[in-house]
Length: 423
Image (cartoon, helix red, strand yellow):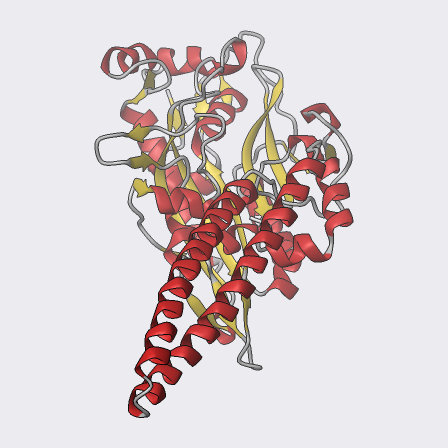
């Protein structure tokens, strides 16, 4: 979340930048400032009353020594009154802080200056693109038909076991999944990321730390008995490793990668865009996360984008990178680049990765800080990216590489699959 200091010192700028995200912040920012003033005023009164109480306590001892019983009794009565005042002021201050925090978590992150104007995906800007468009045979079919033809993925069996959006991978389909996971992890570790294996469920504090909670869109699966949440991405548990941690500046950057299953309710999703692997409730993904010095986070973001580009290039897929407009960005992001690959049989672009800089927004929630050479602590910047999400990568690989002989496997994946073609 945004810091109070930044909001109070840059109020007009905050309101203007929120408006770029199509968020009217005038009323809520005014409430924040009013509550902050109430909190500060209460603190001043508490400090004054506490100082008076401390002085009276010392005075009572002196009066007792001097045998001035009546004056000491009067002073004791005053201390009782002051303690009640301090308690009342403390309750008022605590109430103001609670309301203040409830408001702060409703305010999205500020968009970076380079974020383009716009409301919808159609307003996103294409940064660059590459890869050769495939030429498919005349009888080419979409991946859900290929999955059935070669017995790779059983969507109906998934419905039987769990419901729609939970496919069962079989044979070479399961092997392809495992190959992609290992391929992405090996590339990440070669790029300097430390692999971690996180839990698939997190507590509310972790969901709050990375901004998934409060869950405004109801997209997380909630295990109500234990008050735990199935992770929507490995970003959540991996970033929360550093919750309530003060790092040394020399430890930055921290680079982690993790494979996990991901769980999303995808409430409200329907139509042709959800068919097959296009939109699932459970899917596999390899994530990259960096904890970085604020002065270097945008340089790091460029490096992460360039890294993800190498992955789609190795997979021989047609790709493009989008700079998301303000209206299409997530609540917590300051700047996001999406990767899309072209799905030839569906004749459409599919999002396969999102790489974002959250600046200090998550770090403020997480209380993740670092101590510089001047011994002062400040908030880190957090970044993450899909590197990569498997379902639509698999869809594009199956569709784009279909031939009369079978489905060709990209050369970079053959050492991981152990086969060159699916037939």
